[in-house]
Image 1 (cartoon, one colour):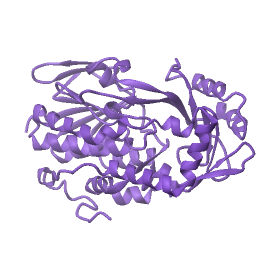
Image 2 (cartoon, rainbow, N blue to C red):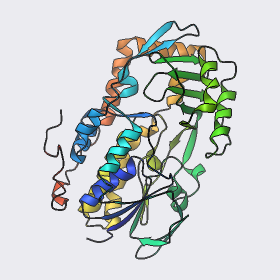
Image 3 (tube, rainbow, N blue to C red):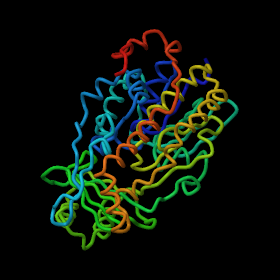
Image 4 (tube, one colour):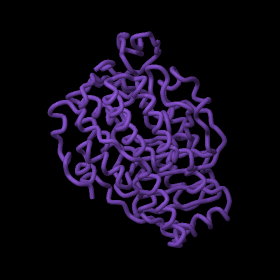
Length: 396
């Protein structure tokens, strides 16, 4: 097999998932991550349908993921006085299996740490492709050459910028931002809305979860205090418990703000470089991101193994994943979570409240989640790699 030395950028979900499979096929994998350590906590992510379950089972982590489930509960849409207007079924926000992103990242890291080289606190600064590999320079580490490079580094992918072009060419702002904060709140999950802005508490996304309409904002992605001020300004004058939540922002240690955006790529690969997960087909809060990442990692690694490391063949087959990933082009979560008009808010509440409207929506999402015929690459695993928990259990 050729092209066995692979560099992966990003150690959240997609990167370690790819490393898990590639090392089982005999590849030598290095994962570089900008953060100084594995990121804990974060919002809840979910899986749905037989396809997601099958990939988790083949990875050997289905039981562990189920053991770490959040459990999920129905939430209530309330008015400014706390009166219930509608009920948000847990299936809407939590899928079939819901787990905190940090818990899933930990599971994947634990299962790859012994077979994968992880480099934290560093990032790629340049990529130069040659006839035989990719010369890579890093912010801190010494330059090195790899056979292949995979960008699994999220919506704001550095690999995509270096290999394909500026972010503005591929990432479209959908008119909204969202924020997560670990403030101290009591009570069950509740969602409060005003035209163009929503605040929720007690859900699995985070103790406090915000979505608000806005034109593109200019801010430093590393300046958390600036981001907190932007959020406070966006919710100036809001009612319900919002003033209480905003008052706690300065002391929030786990805080994240970003745009609701969609990635649109004509190709997921270029030369010896491939994109995976949100870097290739991200859609913020679209409900399919983590599922697409783990299925995409399964397909990309499997095709590389089946092609004997020939990236020209494997990458061409991976491009066919576009048919499954097309669901990422269909959703704008901001419009549903924070409608810009009171009529839109009433229609959203009606959607949650009326079963003959909500049930077909969930069936449609289930169909999207299973709309792929998975190849079985088990025969390509190196000896001993198939000896993982759950490997031969039926999925149910």
